[in-house]
Image (cartoon, rainbow, N blue to C red; front, side, top):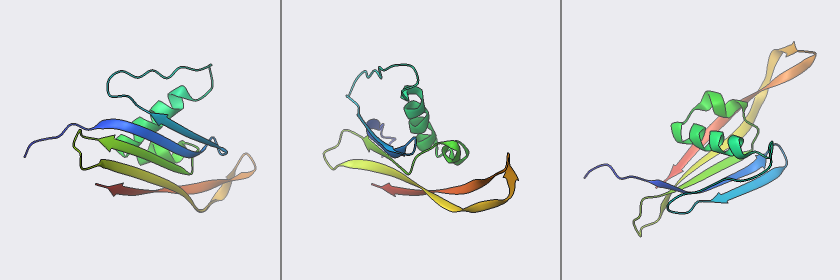
Length: 112
């Protein structure tokens, strides 16, 4: 059995920039994200890349509650789901510019 190529079918972000829900359904071939400057196009792409790479250091810096990426390999048996949940785990013991900096953890759940 060889390597199977997966395509991104969908990305869903709950708590995007704290209070928004974003869903992007991707087509099989070419996709474009079009919008005004500052609306989050690059942030969504960066979230997608970081989740596929499991780049926890980058994911910790991004503002979201739950990030889901649905992958599809062309088979009829379904999709693979990568789900990342961001959780507060406490606060650092020092302050930065007079406010506490929250420590966060990112939990991974993959369904095949």
